[in-house]
Length: 427
Image (cartoon, rainbow, N blue to C red; front, side):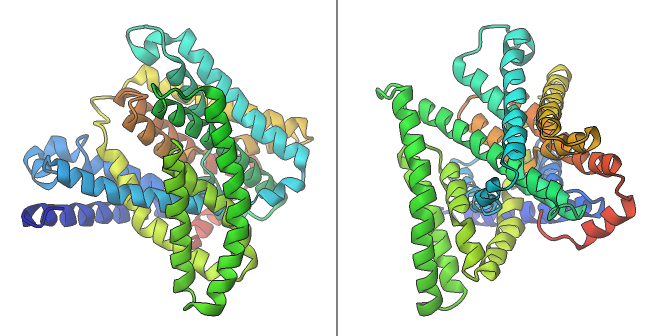
């Protein structure tokens, strides 16, 4: 931010203040109807953005979000920082050790829950090219791959919140769903990182085997070295640094270094932040760092998450870019693919029909992870604003329907869910 232009600093601070206020207000509204606050933050962004506020009060909107490259870059830098912390928190929810329990069920639910919507997404681009691309022109391989990834991913933070609200998180079904969603997200983000590294490497002589090798090597090194180094540094911090602030600083260093290395290797920084969260999960669990984890969680979801998810609503005009045919296609593919895929995996593992469907609908919530995926794809030019809007709407609808469908299938009283939602923290 230029020191010679105080008006830009004023606009920057006002923008952050307004975005946070809108996120807080709409997030609280969503909590009152037992929905994750992140959905309210997105709706607040749509209201604050060109779709509603910019349409009704164009002069005020232009004054608040005045076109300035320097201002936009400063705001985006803060928002990107927030995205790294949010992805780190999402990674801290992934307990890979649970894979040892009910291995067959978890693998079937996660793989089929990822594979079927992925395959439907790929097929739909070839079957309905005019819906996806308007012109009907042949889609390139990167676009086709992205659509498959976008339809196959779940949203671990939102799924965790829904299961917590319904008091299912620590039961057998909750453990199965959470671990399956973690593996699903890990596969999805690894594929997306691979896709982005392929885009970044165009023209530099990189080939697919080399990109695959780098992505695999990076993942293994972060998961192994990150955990070992984390254990050593956390124990040292407990002995030698002020607690818990010293550990907070070390956690932030891990996030920045992992994200930077990922970016240097042409793997997106968000994958680095997510992966180091996965690596440090056991370190936080077994080193008395629960208090630090809670502080990072609250900081990420109370400050950084509203900034990011409200800003998602600012990226497009949801009215001007709304394509009903595309939205209905994306919704149908996403819901049928995920519910049928994960549900079949659970059914093949011995679950009865109702429980299998419940697991499918629990895995169906896309929420925050889908919005981040769509935002990055829009930034890279992989998709246009029509597809971005359709994916965000799909994330909203699938997340909002998961809780009620679980209540109906498992006969959970509405009153219990509302009480749990009133007590639940986070998103």
